[in-house]
Image 1 (tube, one colour):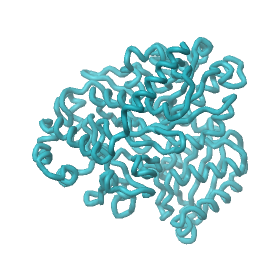
Image 2 (image 1 turned 90 degrees about the vertical axis):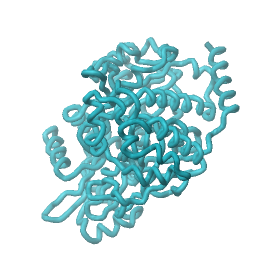
Image 3 (image 1 turned 60 degrees about the vertical axis):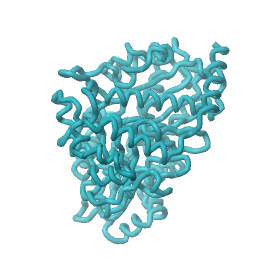
Image 4 (image 1 turned 45 degrees about the horizontal axis):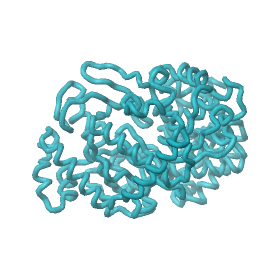
Length: 506
């Protein structure tokens, strides 16, 4: 196996040597041209005259003038509902076999088309990620180890003429045959719909596997690791998987989980961030000396950027029709942007709901800074999830605790607004002391928040609860595992319901 590992590593090194990173601007132009060409005879392509757009000297500008920005509701109501009714050639050529179900941290459940071209795009992006491992100085035997991919169930929901499931389950159900020997927990266990049962089976089978890397959302990976450790009477996960070296994170920022995650290990892992959404595989970390991810600019997704400022957004967190929209070539570093994508699944100028910041334009590297509807700005606070995560890291250090989940809302108290936080930690500390320090930290790092605190935001409260309460809420009102994420910001009504649920647990 060591010889095989050397061969695989050498092949990756050679492949990386003979291939070079694409020029982002040219790659994006070519992607848009391909998208428009392939979809020009669909109903959407005819409605928006893709054939004429392709005749323009500046197809990016022509595309932006002809095609409006869409959020999910607009694209579904105007176009995608026809796909669910069995129509073909609506927004992408051909029929529709899969829909990715997104539970949505900001809205009701979504059904997002996943075409064969998108599945191929996801596979190709996965290959790019594997090839980038040459930059992380991993030993040869790593490439012979198994990969634990903890996603949603691969047992998809059968509908009239299509199947539905979360994107991780759809992707796992379509993994190449050659990869199945490396993939754990395997299709049989991954088909178990009940989360607790699936994790129990993983714990039972864990001694039979030689896991070299993990992949999945941090909160659910951590729960799985704890169950494996407890079930097998271990001190750390390395007692049973001594060759575990890499964790590929995705879905949410990993830093809030690092402290509690590291406590489950005998030695540090190599952490690699990815950006796999229900709408496609958008970016992956390609080098070890950054936490940013490189947009995958040459693989079926065209990116646009809307400056995340009040004049571009309406009260519902949607991009206004007259908003400023930039291409990757025009966008600048260190500015919050709403991300738009057009894809080989027939999403067109689609507001995915995330805000990003370009950290290195030459490398087309980004960081996810939050959600368009997870940006707290009820009374002028202008707090992004990125800023909240940074503040929580400071609170972890100050109180020597692990903070894995939190939620905040602007609520009315005595006819005035306050920010109230529920913070999920591994042990209870004084909430009022944390509220005071959290308030100070945010005032020091966000001038808009500081102004709001002197005017319309009259106070800050915090309650520190055990993180298990967040997971119990998720199990009862959303679901455990898969791509499910706990929201960072709630509106007042939802927050008060959450508060009531938490109080019933105490």
